[in-house]
Image: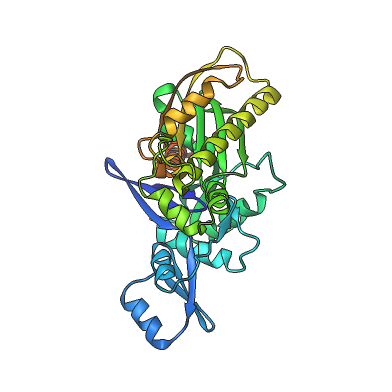
Length: 348
């Protein structure tokens, strides 16, 4: 067995193969703090609410955190910010560990192979992903897995472009970052991230309209469409403006990085977009329209969205993990006959 893990700012998802089906498990990557009492902890335990006690506080974690935040009129907190572990959140590591344990479960065998997503260093920020990547590696190793990071953009290529020989441009629009990878026959030619994503859109919209960020996020996740028929002064109109700005910013950085990497001209590749931020209806068409005017030295054969944008990165990580696990099994099988053939010679 092998597993894939998408460690996202908004959600953490795992994927594993069960027969012909891929099974995904998802938890929101957030928590909320409430006052401790014996009665409260008993009720939480009886209700199977994911939580952890620390001194005189109880932290409700994952999907239940949003419900409790609404009930107690509190803001949820996140272990991650801008696509990596939050340096401003003292409880980041224990919280993300608890959520991850619930999502991936125990390994089915010692040192089960697990590929987990890791963003590229953002080219528009001084942030570095090394501490984030190595901390997750250590945490997953302590859980009994044999972990391996996979670039988030490359995971999109593995998940969505098998029918094109793993050649194309994969873009993961996450909450904290946007990850971009151009691959040619499964070999990454260019990969980078930018420190803008769904959170940036929500924050800018909140500032522009005076609407709380959590409210903006709820509106965006509830049937929001990029059809530009909404009133300019409303939250949905502001969301559309900042979505369009994000797409232009991503395309601008793709053009710059292609020039710096000296990517071969004449390529004709598909583009696949995925991630929770790419979920609104109309996103794919809007991105395709903006790409038409972009100064990119290769051709775009088409733009499409992943069938399941939320699961794409976890699925790609699973593909990579299963592929490597298969190679390891084949190598082991190849070694066994050689050992059997050598045995008669030693007896002579």
